Amino acid sequence: MKRVIKSIILIAVFFAATGCNHIVLRQDLYEKVAFESEKIKPGKNIIELYSLKFPGEYFERIEYMKEFELVARQLLLEDRSLNLLVPREMYDTIESLKKEAVLPEERVYLKTASDLDGHEMAEIDKNIDVYVTDRGGSIQGYLNKQVYFWMALSGKESEFIGENLYTELDKQRLVEEIRKSRKEFSKVLNNVKLQLVIKEEKPYSTKNMQLGPLKPTETSSSTDLPGWLLAEKDPIYLKGLKNSDFDKISEKKIKFNSSFLILDSEKWTGYTVVDGNYIFFHGGSDIRGSYHRYDFEVKISEKTVKDLLYLESGILLDELFQRKKPEINGLEEKTAQPNKKSVNWGIN
Image 1: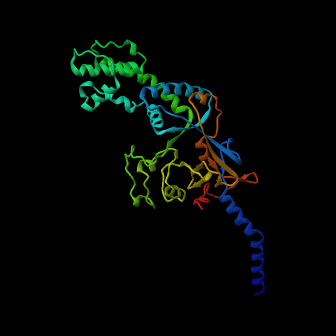
Image 2: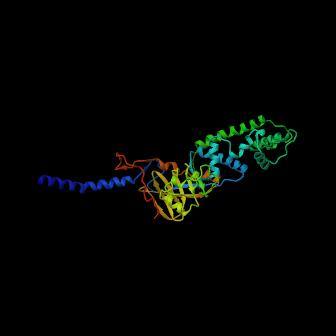
Image 3: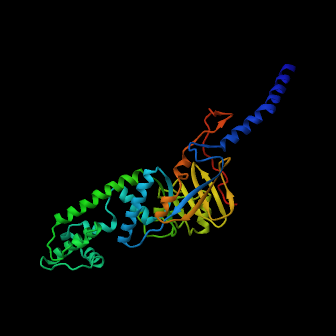
């Protein structure tokens, strides 16, 4: 009996001396993380976001994208990496150009002239104001206007002759010239290290309501945010949120597909991590954080396309997801530990 009591005492002393420390260490490990990128260091890390404006008129946008292409080529040549905050329209344009797809505004000019409906004819008349012959009838007139559009896009509008009877083959040749030039641009866009964040300043807008609003049963809490926004997979910056939705997002009561959200906030700065995904807060002064020893803060600054030529590489958003296990006394922890943790998710 004495031996049993003695053994129990020894076990208790062992746990008192070593067991508690082991438990604390594992709990501490659970909150720690390390990053593969050498640019991310313990302490304060600034995530630079450069905000761009996008013109509203089609031909202005085309000229803007030509300038953007020249800058992107230089960034690719110098292997520089930047995070860009762009309006939805610019994001959609870049994604289309990456895929060598025709832009939405161009589809009506690609369509066979004889297949145009009344609405499409009215759109062409509204946007193309040049003289065209009436010798071939109305269909010929609209074909000529389509040809003028593609000539203008190629910088050849001075070569357009309104009296000519252009053919669908003439139009197709011009289209192929545009496709060829954009194919090179597509290669640049798909290789340059630019991380795009979609700027949504009117998150309750129905203009992109392809998916419709989510029903209350599709999330743990009802929201007026539309389904197309919740389904977006790429990084998003949200401004103009209702206070109730801001709280629900921060408390994980509204689920987004995006793994990186930036919320405009008058109170908070910093970030939180849930299930490996990031929510950053921008605009406030009260600091929030999740990972031990790592403070992250988003800084947003307005820039022109030309300004991008003079900016230094920074931490790309993708690099925040390239995590690894932390090292203990120079040795990588061998036991299976989660590399992410939900910390301080709710707003107090």
